[in-house]
Every structure is written in structure tokens, then in C-alpha cells.
Length: 328
Image (cartoon, rainbow, N blue to C red; front, side):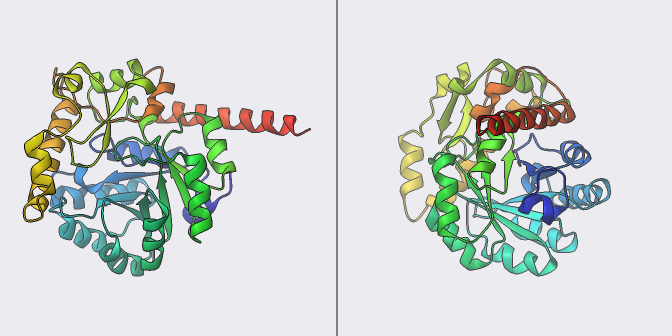
């Protein structure tokens, strides 16, 4: 066992969170994560309606013994946020990860119920803000993350956050091997949030084409686009992505900068982007917009959650043994 804040807080074997991935994460992935000694998190928006969301949580509470998390988009693009919070008050998960906005309301409503609140941060300023609001930990979203990535390397971001706050730091991004896990733990992280290596699993709910893309493409094929949500987001550089480009056009950019209408423009951009990802995730199409991070570099085949996790832990143990031998 590896003992950290994550393992002791959630009573699990490994300091790993199966990261929330839009459309990729499903109940089956979270159940397998729990069976294999760690915990998973699923975006609330992966459920089509608040009613389906409540049904999914009810099933997870039984299958995972309550050990799972929910990822909430907490800005105005999530039109179901209030309904999602209502559901979570009725069925509290072990933790919630907040993204792309202020966690204040989430903390006020869910922390008194015993829910641990983990907040995505990309810099010291926002980490200090969420600490002042009462967050339990921060997810250090670094430059190696998939989806909405940060712009600071983990070797710099983790020590920065540890120095600036008293909150536990969990690293998100760039870890696809056991030696990568060892490296972020050695920097002082209490664990790691891993997503992209679990895209190409038999348990994930996306198409075989999406899974195969995670096998066939590598780190050099990951690009940033602002076309999906208005915020920079990493995707696989497929022929379709190359065709449409990665920057917003003049009209999109103008609408997102106009003070009077940018809120609605961002909501429209987010809606259109999510629909494009949804179409690509579940069907074979030339118009493929597949989210992933550079850690797909280490994905060589479609396998299971159990196989990937065992590989990571075996590699971690080997890397730790080698490191200790170097110290004499």
C-alpha cells in the first residue's frame, strides 16, 4: 500500500483518482476502479438529465460502497448545476471535484454533509481562493493534463501550490506510467488524477474508433483547441481537427469578448462543442473531435481497468526499487 492523504481519507489502496472524462467516464469504469483499489469520478454532465443523474448515483452508491466522486462544472455553462446540487444533497458522494468556476455554493451545500470538496486549480491565486472558501484539497491541473489543461509543468506547479497553501495537492496530467506516479508523489503530491490511459479500456463507454485512436496516436498528436468550450482544451489532432482548425473564428471570438453577450456566447460555444464531442465519441465519423491528453503515448492496446492499474503499480514498484538502489 501507498499511504497518502487520498488513501487514508477514502480508505483505498492506491493514491489514484480515475479522472472525470466527458462521455468516457461511466458507472462501469468507476465500479472497476473501486474493485481495483482506487476511486473514480464521473462528470455530472455525462448523464443526459437530472433524473438519469440521480438514478446513476443511486446505482453507484450500491456498487462502489459510496466510494466515488462527481465532477461539477460550476460556471454558467452548466444549466443543470442547481438540479445536480439538489441531487447530491440527497445522495452525497465521497467527494466532488469542481471545475471552471467558483466552488463557493458547492462547498456551502455539500461540505456539511461530509462530502470532500476537491477543486481544479491551475495557479497559486485560484488555489488560495478555494482554500479561503473551505476546499478540502486542490487538483493541480498541469500542462500535461487532458481536457482543460493548465500551462505549468507538474514539477513546478506542485511545489508552488504546496508552498502557497496548506491544502493537500493532487496532480492531474501527464502520468501514464508507474515512474510518472512515483515522480509526482516525490514532488509532494498526495496522489494523482489519471484519465487518458483509461480511455482505451473495455469498460469505457465510447466507440471502438475513439479507443483505437488513443492507441494509434501519441503525445505529439495532442493539440489545444478553443472551439469546444471557449477555454483551451486538448484533443487528438485528427484530419477533421486539422480541417476545422483549433482557433475560434472572428465571429466566435467577438461574441466571447463582448461584455453584454459573452455569457450567452460561451454557453452556445460549450453546447456546440459538447455536441461535437458526443457525436464523435459514440459513432464512427470523419468529423472526429476526441478529447485526450498526451499520456495516451503509453497506451499500446485496448485493455481493462485492472490490467492498466496493475501495470502502473508494477512499474511504480520497479521504479521505486531502482531509485532506492541508486541511493545505495
